[in-house]
Length: 351
Ligand code: ADP
Image 1 (cartoon, rainbow, N blue to C red):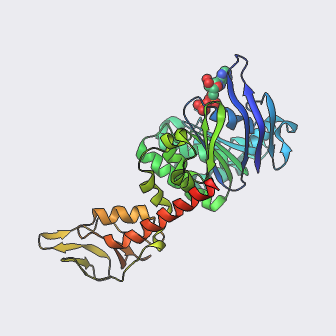
Image 2 (image 1 turned 135 degrees about the vertical axis):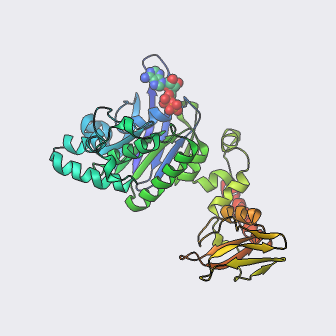
Image 3 (image 1 turned 45 degrees about the vertical axis):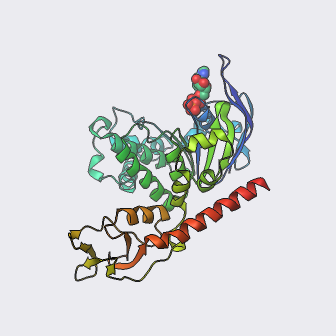
């Protein structure tokens, strides 16, 4: 656990970036600091690995005050990923990744070997290893940045706006990749972003900061959407939060009907193995516009129902064979369930 205990930071020019921040960050989870530009997120993050020293208060990692550890050693033991990767331009990709292990005394050859394995881990082919950062796309550089931060196998990873410099499609891939990696690695990750959608997607817990790192709300993403603590948080999470909350409701709460090839005058056509091909209506064959697997969110299923020519989302099994249908009327139960959950969160907040 990482603990901020009444931490403040006032810069020499008199700016108070963080004022009296108290916060506990759980081990093995992704905690996101989100808030408008200049509210003190980066300052708070950098105090964890002593790149910035607090003016007052304490930061403890597993009970030990970070100031009792030499800053250089601490920084080698905590992975750090920044916007635009921050790679050394004159070092090859492999040597970038091997940097910290070599600093820690590992043999260069071993460190480079491990670096190749890490490239694969972050979804890059090993043959990129001999390239220089400028020869990679922004998204690839960012993956190398993550690989480099993971090279020393640190239990804690700090990520400062790691995906802000890439376009929306690449960002989406990188976010998915981070979640996949984290499900394997279970690191303690603290991630800073100004993007509330990113916070909601990635965070197990989200700390919403206002100016001076005032903690406006600290909650699970679903609770943030269900019950913003005040107007500031409500304006930050923005519109459609009821609908967006459906991302956290899973499909197990809605009725999935056995496959019925006739729906409302449309007919689901499948190939000989039972994989959906499309909906046959009197006007012709229309693509199913996607399908979902068990465990999909209610939001994703709702989207498919709306897009489907027949108004029916098709569930497929592991082999892609159609094995269930959700109709428009079946969504109502899930939506109702979500609405009740919100009331529970509100009641807890009020009680
Ligand atoms: P965020 O990451 O939320 O954008 P920062 O932690 O970078 O916010 O900055 C918080 C406040 O501290 C801002 O007003 C910023 O201008 C100020 N600040 C950040 N770094 C310094 C510095 N080295 N010296 C003086 N002021 C700083």
